[in-house]
Image (cartoon, rainbow, N blue to C red; front, side):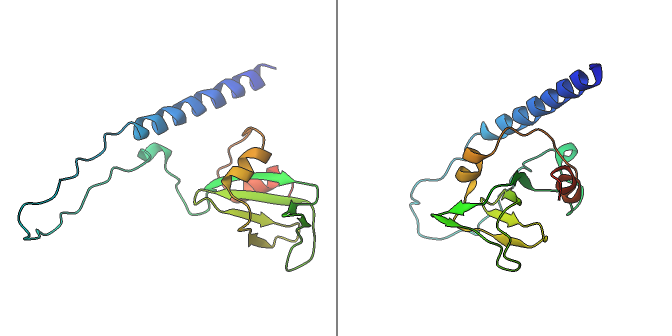
Length: 148
């Protein structure tokens, strides 16, 4: 009982720390843009230094890390009134749905075939997914947790 309470508390603290980092970066002041220039001589543009989004402690250490969210979708997936089937093997249920940070949604069937689904987006994912219950360091860990 106490391990679960401690794990829940640690999870909430990690969520609060992540939200604090996101809030810090959304409150950055916008750069001052110059108005119309009086003379027409163009100056060489200086490269703009953009701060890193995440501090080094929060960055992903390798390319194996998941850069989005995933959920199980056990029932048939109906998109625009049609049951979606895997183009490679024809399976139509037991999907893993990935919501990537670039606003794309990918589907993975039980045969490990992955395809991008352009008719689905982050808004669809947010409407149909539940709350985040686990964070996984690698894609394989996440798939193992979801039963694939």
